[in-house]
Image (cartoon, rainbow, N blue to C red; front, side, top):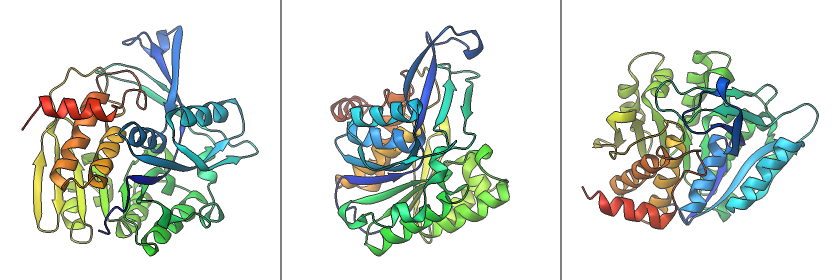
Length: 317
């Protein structure tokens, strides 16, 4: 992997509005109040990076309506760069998620009909100066349909040509894809352009075409600098060349399962950018995920740098 040149990232993928049933523990169908927050995997990662002291610019397309403007305003409040956030006209709509803060049987209902972020075009990324940033992070949902798929592959090739690492979060969402076989084929192509691939056990099973995701992750490590195979409460396994290591989770009293993956990515990449070795960076991502599941929201729940450092210090290996 090319060295991450700076703690400065381009993050490509979806941004949306999350509506959380309030108070925590309330079922969505019984709720009379909801709290609004920034959502979408790429947006959450970008916000998490900024909260951890890095710089992040989002590459996405938002609807030109109230929901799109809400998301743009939230991104600005977090300090996420908006120079590559474009508008999508017509009937395109920014994603909306109705989410519960519950640990057991947590419902998340996502509305993505005519999703605005799928309108990202190759010409929208062609003028980006990838060499001006430390690395490109791609969330796999952007690969599900055209023209976003072509734009994403172009961005990955341009980042590599500029000598910048490409980090892929598989981010498999079944409702975005025509079928699992297509997702496996397209994500395999994307993994071939990536230096780091991150996903959970179910996502690697999709890439493998069925059970066998762990072996598939190990195989991918022959072509990538690192492959991180996450297993929820069982922690993660990281493969790097012929080496591997396990990272356990941090014991916390979780409120909900959502947001952990995005916080993990933010903690991981900012750790790598700061010069931490891979095991320490994975542990940093794991700690960020642990903090995030104890609070309401995804972007709002992700930790700041001082909080994360103190948390890790309290949980010395």
